[in-house]
Image (cartoon, rainbow, N blue to C red; front, side, top):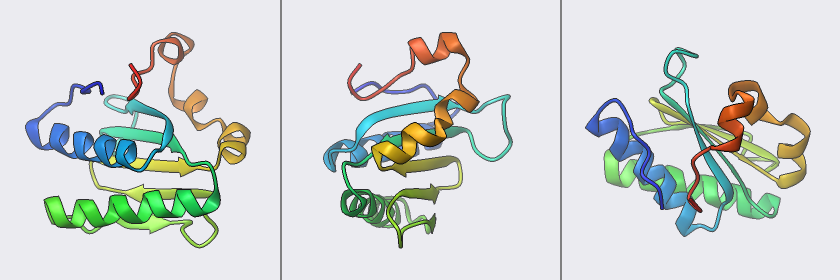
Length: 126
């Protein structure tokens, strides 16, 4: 698993916890987008896929539980009821978990990554 560079230890710990949780729960096509200088909403955006609505919801719930247990963070979750696209606001990181068809439709990564970044995007498989 790659360890993304973050501006601080706390930020790196949060991102590592997110990536570990996603890996443990078999999320697919996980990428990290550095939002520094691009947006004020967060330092990082993490985009991942689950194979079904049920898996997307389970990944989101487990990530929320781990963040609360390990870091005492209460997160906001949107979209858990449908399981097509779940957004988890972790404060310094925003996590999007999609069903593959929904991810292909919205192509969120293309809005935030340049063509060069899309070719060398970091992931758990790197």
